[in-house]
Length: 245
Image 1 (cartoon, rainbow, N blue to C red):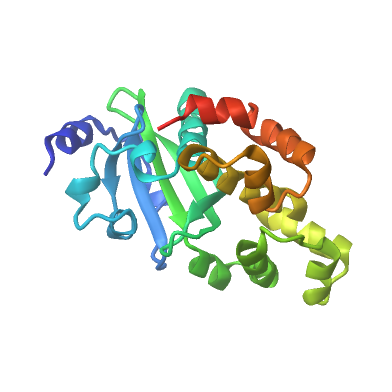
Image 2: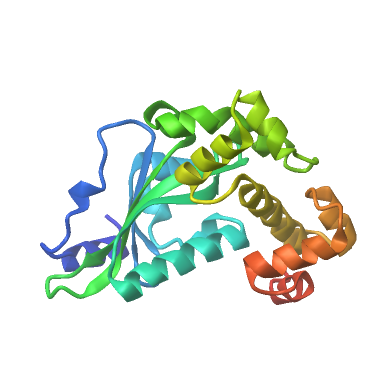
């Protein structure tokens, strides 16, 4: 056992109910991180998905070692909020890469982890895979074709009314189910998908902002700037300069 992992496990107290996060079903990713965001435990599905052959290889890694910066930063901030508040969060919709590296929608349950004295020393989480959610959630199954269409076509001009019609639903009903399942509107989901890939391009390419905006599906430069600032909290140029490799 890795010494870092062994030391962390010795500190785990009986306040923890990690069994509440575990599922007998297939397709559930499980991990525990310390307050610094370092992985302390991970099931096989998790470490294999991250490209490792054993749990020992992933111990000590952070989200910044495993994912694109914008995703890692979002995961880290969400988990730090859980640590600070000491409250569990359930059914959290998150964007994450699937086994093919394509961004898809997942659902996570996250809760603080305590030591023997009851002090919070980390976060435990389960994340359900796309296939698992399709099998288990009726609402998700209903809108799954639309999610798959958005995943494959987010760079194009997607019509929400046409998405609803493809599912034989009214636009209102489609929007209600979509928000109930994912907690965001269809348009916001599409924008979040585009913003992610814009973040990747800003860090990994030297493409002009206008080109990046067009490549990810924003055909109006001012809209791209406005939406990027709204969802990321800074202008694209500042984001690029802050995260230059």
